[in-house]
Length: 627
Image (tube, rainbow, N blue to C red; front, side, top):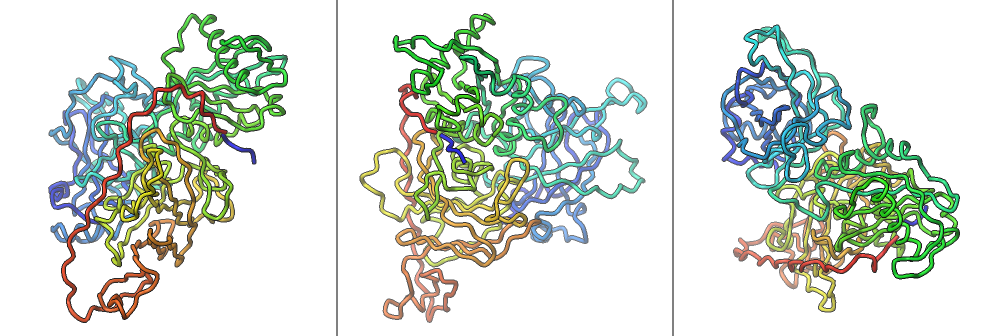
C-alpha cells in the first residue's frame, strides 16, 4: 500500500578494435554515416544497431577513431578509452558485407520509424507473426533504445542510383561484453543525409543525458514481466463520477503521437526505470470506463455497499462487477490477463484510508491494484502498487521505524525509480562487472575500487555485496537470503521520473547504501532499508559481523562516483595479534602499514551459495494485500 503524504579490456575483443566500419548485410542497402557514441565506464565498447527490417549491425571502434594519436596496441587503446570514459566521440561508419548476428528468429513487424510518434515506435508487429514475447522483434544480444535514427541509413535497393533513396531507420542497441556483465551505453544524434567522404563532418550538437541500454538475456532475469499487461477499470458508482475520463487517463498512461520529449507518462516511467527491459504501452493495456452497481451481493453472497464502505466485500466486488460488465458489453474474455487495476472515484477517499492497495506478488491466477481517485494522477502511487504485484515490499531506513521512510524509493515515499536493491530484484538493474561481491571476491582488509555510473543512465550501475561470511539466522523461514545483501548506488535527479528533495542535491547527487534480503524470485516480498546517504569524502561502516565499509572519494556529474569498499573483521587493529604489520587494513580505516615480512598466501575463501528459492505458492493472492 502507498501511504499518503573495470576498466578491463578483454584480450578476446581486441579484434573488435582493428577497424572502424559498420558490419551489415547486404552492403548496397546502406550509405556512409556518423554516430556520436558514449564511451562507457565498462569496457570494451561494443555498439550494435538494428534497421527497420530487423537486420543487426555492429559498430566497431578502431584506434584511428579515438581522439589523439594512439599506438596500435591493446594496452594503449585500453588506456585511451579509460581516459575517455563518460565522454562522447563521433565515429564514422561505412558499408561492409559480413552479418554479425543470426537472423533466423521469428518474423516480427518492422519498427515504426521516426515521425510516427514516440508511442508508435516499436509497438507490436506490423507484418508477419508477432515475436514470442509480444515485442517488436528484438534480436538476440540487443535491446531497443528509444526512437529510431531518422537520417543515418538509406535504401537504394532496386534503384541503382541515389536519386531514389529510401530512408531506413536505425535503432541503437548495446550488447554484453565477453565477461557477461559489461554493458555499453550508447547515444546517437540525428543528422541529415551522409556527406561525401571529402566533406568535413559537422560539429556534433550538445547531446542530451545518455540513455542506458539493457541487452536481453536468453530468459528474463528478475521478477518483473517483460510485457506489463493490465486490464484497467476506471470506476463510477453510487452517483460518484470517474476520477479521470478515459482520455485523461490514457494521456498520462501511454505515449501517443503527440507525446513530447520529457512527458510524464507511465509508459515512459517503466521504460526509464527498467532501461527498456519491461514494456508498458498501448498494445498491452486494456482501459475501460465502467459504471458498476452501488450495492449487491458478493460471489459468496455477502452484501456490499459502495456508498460509504471500503471493505474486502467492496474491493473484490468492484473487480468482479467491472470484469463481468466489460466482457458482456464487448463480447471479450479477460481471463488471460492476470493483472487487474481499478481507479476509484475521488469521493471514496473519505472511506478508503490509503492512496493505493495491492496484492503481494502475482502468484495466483489474479493480482490486483486499487488506486484512490485523489491519487489517480500520481504515477509514483501506481508504480508503488505495481511493485507490490511484482514482489516488492515497503522501503524504510535504518534510523527510523517508519516502514515508508525511504525517500529514495517509490516503495517508501520517493518520487523516483526503484532503489538498486528493488531494481536488481526486478531485473531492472545489474551490478557493475566484477562488482557482485562475496567472501570469495572481497577478502578481509583489501580495498576494492569502482567507478559508479548514475543508476538512471546505466543498466549495470551498482555494487552488490553479499556477506556470506555472516552466520544466518536459523529462525528465518521466509525463503529470502539468509543475511541481507548491501547495494551501493549513485542517484541524482533525473526529471521527470526522479525528483529529489534537499537531502540529495542534484547535481551531483549522492551515493546510497541499501540493505535487503531480497532474491530475484517474486516471493517473498521483504522490506528493505536505506542505510546511508553519502557525499564526497563520507564513509559508511556496517557493524560487525557484516563489517562492510564504503568510502566515497568524489562525485562528478560527467563521470559518476569514485568509491571503494572494504571488509573488516575487527573494530581496530592491535599489535598483540599482529594485525598492525600484516599489510592488510583489517579494520578498514584507510591505513595499512607494509608487512615486516611477506605474508603467507591465503587460500581462496569458499563462496557460500545462497539458498535457491522454492517454487512460489499457487495460493490466490487475495489473502495478502498491502497499501
